[in-house]
Length: 258
Ligand SMILES: [Zn+2]
Image 1 (cartoon, rainbow, N blue to C red):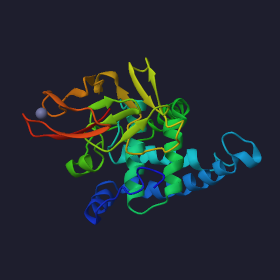
Image 2: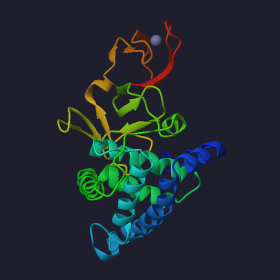
Image 3: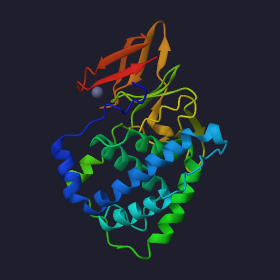
């Protein structure tokens, strides 16, 4: 398995919720994926033709993204107050979900390449497109149905750990290798995830981690100490390269690599 999100799936019921509750987005996603898949082919050809962004990247992709933003307004997923980062995260979550309905992995990869590896460029593009469409869009309040909320909820938690090989989520299997992230001070002190080293763009991972979400476990005398993601209780275990911990206080089962 080359891409960690490849096996990410959805139930028929989840797909039904997406189609029913997000009618405009559903209509826009087909074209968004079609143009993204073409753009991915173009990216594959970049070494042959020497164009760093690929030779046909702009063919339809930006326009389809713009239509998708309008759809997000129409389905009340965003408002004019939505930040670029939040918008980028929403596009990532919609893409992961749409892919999980059995859609093209090439398209999903192109979107993730843009969001992760070309992060500042895609933030700029999103900001620009958003300002173009917000005047013609429904600028009503957010109105996200509970079922949609859970469909688009983050796969990862806000409780991460630092290890020798990288950073990992204590509550999911998402792990970001050394070289695939950078510590940054803007937009806030934290960690920007870009997958520039392994290029295994994991659509389940967030684009940005708050600095306070990442704990560096204490290791001494062959023991590791880190706090439980459920209740904050300090838990101790043998400092194996990988361990699963059950918190004695709240029974949360979580994981850690050293
Ligand atoms: Zn606990």
